[in-house]
Length: 164
Image (cartoon, rainbow, N blue to C red; front, side, top):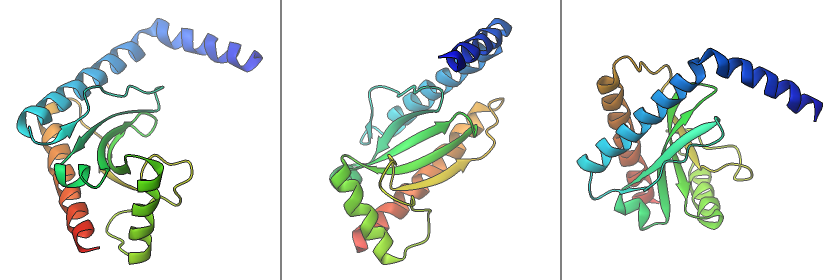
């Protein structure tokens, strides 16, 4: 527990500066705004009612078209805190679906997007970087970039799955 005590002293020190709280709050507001924007623009998509705020490791919400939802798959828009980047993930609604879809992609030798190395310990099947170094100073452009890249990813997933 001594390590935790050291971590907590550093945590308190960082919080006293006030920057972490402002950055985190701004990020959460951006994620909420992104979710609302997509929900209004794509009313036929399944969008999770809540945002998963995580443990300062990742924050995400789902944004899934009916075609993938009907296959028990989901799309997640993910912000990875440590890497400070946005990614889009294909995931399964349960482990069985995840394993089946992972095997289908692996056996096809489809290499358009990176397949996770294994289904063990991963919440995703395929992960793709959307924005490596997001510019939060221009949120409208950032939102458009995330939207466009996500729609391309979804279309590619739909095409692949319809052929396999």
